[in-house]
Image 1: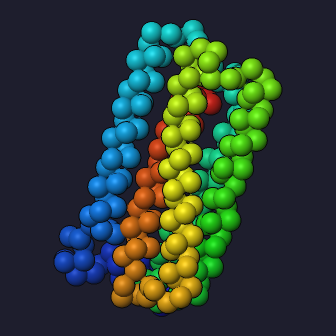
Image 2 (image 1 turned 45 degrees about the vertical axis):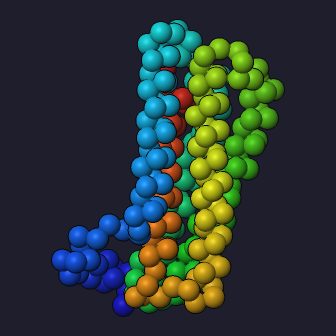
Image 3 (image 1 turned 120 degrees about the vertical axis):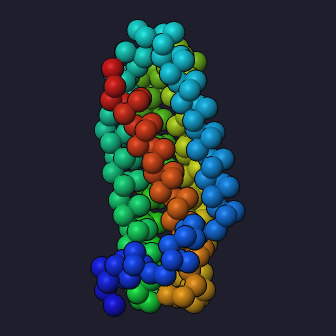
Length: 201
């Protein structure tokens, strides 16, 4: 079965399967907590932006658009690879799924590397975190997101090990789907952070 056939079969599966949330309830509690946390931080961002418009207007000019764009590409690419891994697992192509997971891990590992280089660049250009409210908000949100990405990398390593040792197959791979849900949520958060700090004047 190809990935496309697996996707079609999943979409047109039994009503019980369609009514079941992807992954498990525990991961969705975690995702809800993650989204709630960042919703509050985005609220702080907009309050600060309203009260300090000039600082936020000039803020993106101080950051590295290249670094932000690179991490956006990394998050989107790794999410695509994770989705491919899930589709391959659904079609019972475990070895193919594992290779997609390796590709996802390798690409996602670039995120903290780029972030470390970005922080070094920031410090060299005076973006220290205590300069103004834009910088403080930027560091607070991006560091929190980095923590979630780091957890995701650890989770991805565990999923890879489980897959390698036969822990998942076409019938049972809820752990993989749960992780995919978490990673896509983390990706979504970055897609909101990127324009707010790196693009919008």
